[in-house]
Length: 72
Image 1 (cartoon, rainbow, N blue to C red):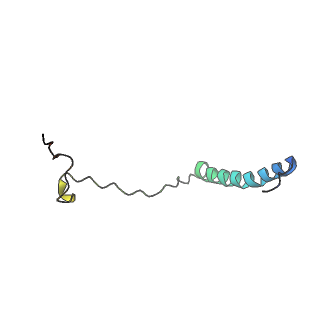
Image 2: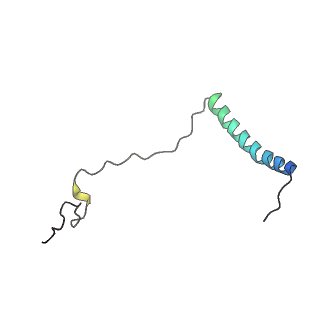
Image 3: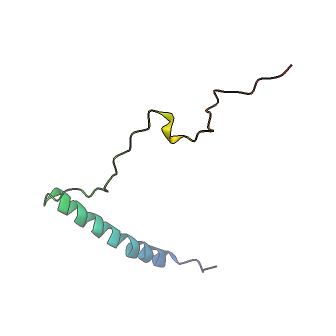
């Protein structure tokens, strides 16, 4: 396992990791808020309507409507 870093090294590691993240976030916010660039969105597929009939179900599929009767 890796050795435990001294406090000064941990602070430096934190700075090295967080400064690029903060810079990228600040740049994106600057573009959106000051320059008026639109927000990026993911393209979404339109949902397909559900079938209203049982055409898509196999012939031998029964949705529990026909239960086997108990024989006495």
